[in-house]
Length: 396
Image (cartoon, rainbow, N blue to C red; front, side):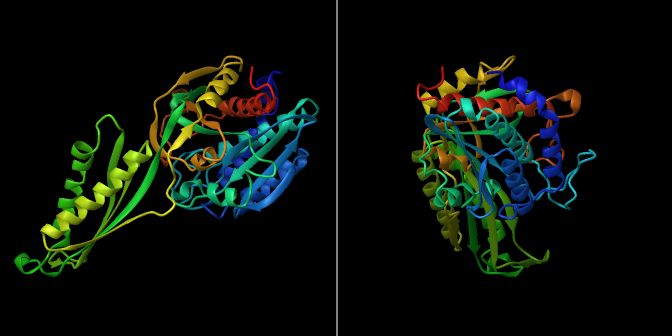
């Protein structure tokens, strides 16, 4: 079945849908208009719709005429607090909010896949669940966990789950796949350094939290270089420093915020413990007190099932003209990881890098731009995965 040709026939509709969503981006947990659009589209395809799943999430259910497996497909819906600097006619109409991570394209592609599969209900094995998820960008509790708690992976139980993400480091139309760990666990930390303020002319009478913060920032880099196996990918970065009000006042406190990225749970546990240990040790040495907090419910490592990934590669290679590339893991985080803890499956990437169209900036950039020519490839790939993995014999 040539799903790519069929996706090409609805390409203009997918582009229109993507642009509608792009113009009205919504932040995590506030995807009301996007969810409404999704529900209306699914209903028009003849897909059963369950709104309000996990908050603003939407679940579509399509039952094939033939007995088979249950396959879930996921797209995230939320935007980012980024002011758009891309000069396009459909640029964001919401000040300071932008679809800078391609979630608008994800929604459009999954809606495209839903339409394609609904048109082949008579030939379809099993059941397909279309999961339109809120709050992927939240980083803590996120949107996948609330949807799981609301039962999206049950009744009927999901046998396989797949997710797709736009990627600016891959050429347009190129698929990036990896078995095993493909994305990191992103652990946010906050450090409050409690010292004793005073006049800037007499630092010896204070416990300077800014000076101590500087020592902490330098020292925690030693966790990656001296305390973690160098063969284990690990990053620790401080992204925010808050302290002080005036040049001649040494403040009482300093606040640091940062992130730890790891690709396995053992390294994750050790890294968090060592960062906390070093921070407290440095502060104690200078007479300050440290409070170290890690984000609760942070996303786990995204781990692709080996057999499901191998099957997915075979399916993707059937797409006419498809380029399937084995990639290295990336240290970005993804709460699709939570779905993969409930069922085997794979998370994969679709390239959108096209210098001729100015599609070269990374995700989360105010200048990020999607090459809309890839939407048909994404829709076709999702439809094919659901079609072939729904077959009781599995993908050929």
